[in-house]
Image (cartoon, rainbow over all chains, first blue to last red; front, side, top):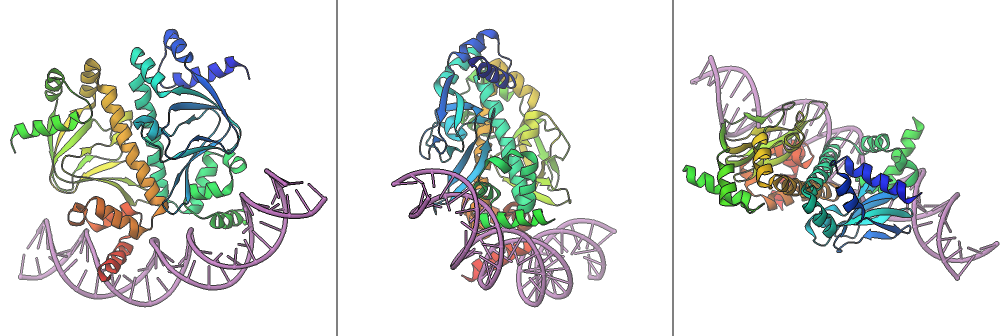
Length: 197
Length: 197
DNA sequence: TAATTCCCTTGATGTAGGTTAAGTAGTGGA
DNA sequence: TCCACTACTTAACCTACATCAAGGGAATTA
């Protein structure tokens, strides 16, 4: 795809949060950096400080924690045109507990923390972008909390498929299992059950 | 307690988020409203739009959702000097899915959404307070997500007691059970088990 | 192409927590 | 004061999911 369509993606995405003037847009655009990752590479590792707020141009990522006993817990999957960032680390500039890994080859359009702060301070939209993003992901966590507290693993799986059918094809089942809070074996059995119905 | 100490509570609390000038502080203080609730009353009901961001001067509250089958799911407990608000509704000004109930007689110091927006727009701190609050509660949800995904009910109970021993005395066990994602009977068993050890 | 590894599945068995039912103690209202 | 109600507990039984062990197929590497 052409640089123009990448620009368009960014423009569209940011405009959902704040109405940027041509001037603001041009200033922001000049700081956008394209980054690519191979399958399996990390956009952000555990312990690293997240420098970028990015939007996925093409590809699939997952965010995950590591529990004390070394197990990986997937907590988010991100696709084309989604935001991607180890958000808490990005906000606080402290070492990240969450890692972000490319599950396919990935191209993202990134803006650096410093640039975003500077730009948006200048244009009075920084706090707003930050606030709206925080609110958005907070809401998502709240929904997830309800889902974890009230639904069975099978119901959560169906909900997930319903919300995001792409998952089925693109993401290894073991990651989906950990996202659902169950073991891969259990997910296997749930899928078998559903296929038989 | 005197009005002065109430002022002090507010000043201290807000100053943790933003450094307010004397002028900003005076302006904000003039819009603070004291509200009281009896035990069992609601600070915000399901379906209502949350108008206030409040700080508890004295008392204990719980926030809870209702699942489709009519069950209550407690998701937060708030004590003296904590923020309290049906936050998502406050942010979006849409009807709240979360209700907030006084578990004891409660006195809060509240600022109205409109006043906060106006004030802080004027003083350039609005978005900042909003952002920092959203980030704070987001982080809490993230921690809770991990806890729900990786710990057993018994471990979550111990973690909760550890973080907030007051809970033991002040909050009915059935609410704690629902917060932990288990039935009251199961919490009973867990408590018995722990007592025997 | 063979070898290795990873991913997914299946089966057998174990366990945390759910469900149902019953009983006790404390609390507020008439 | 008695009644009704709610909060909490206990016990018996049941279910969803975990754990352990094994095997097959696809993908990666030599």
